[in-house]
Amino acid sequence: RFQFLLFLFVAAALPGAASQGRALAYYPDAAAYHTVDAFNREVRQLAEQHPCCVTVDERGKSRDGDPLFLVRLTDQKRVSTKPRLKVLISYGEHAREFLPIESFFKLVRDWSSAFAAGDPKTRFLLENSELLLIGLANPDGRRRLERDKSYCWRGMANNVDLNRNTDWNWGGTGSSGNIKSEEYRGK
Image (cartoon, one colour):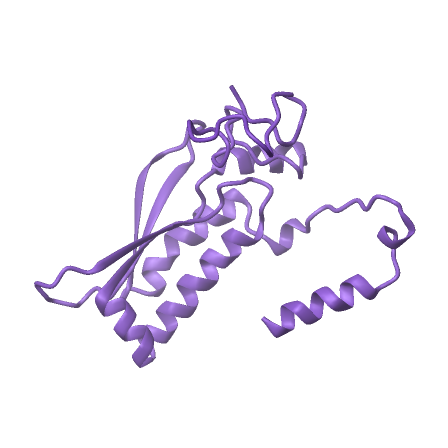
């Protein structure tokens, strides 16, 4: 946490276009983040790399045909009649958010490596719980972003925003009915 806060402090203090009132153009370095194709290749390898505690299941296809994966992170050898606590975590709902997918891979690698190394806290957690992880919930939206280089796009292939297209508080603060708005709530 300290390193992140230090980064923010240093970044805010640097002279640059933003401090001079000009808009910044940001284009993510595709080599630094997983594309949909890279995600699909790498997620399939997780169970091979960490068979002690990782399983990868293809649970269906997206609207545009990409696989939808469910990754289970738990002690595979545990035999007990006591039920495990199940926790569902999803990543990659918004196409424009690059870090959640990277966080998914970091969590799986760190926890599985710690489990394999015998770390007592990690072993306890994975012996008594099961993490159900959706690493990329919106592959269609991410493909659109990659194809069009529309780095503000966050919706899915059908213009639905997973955080805004619900019956609860529909069309409220933070959404727009304008189809050209990056806050467009869909139909």
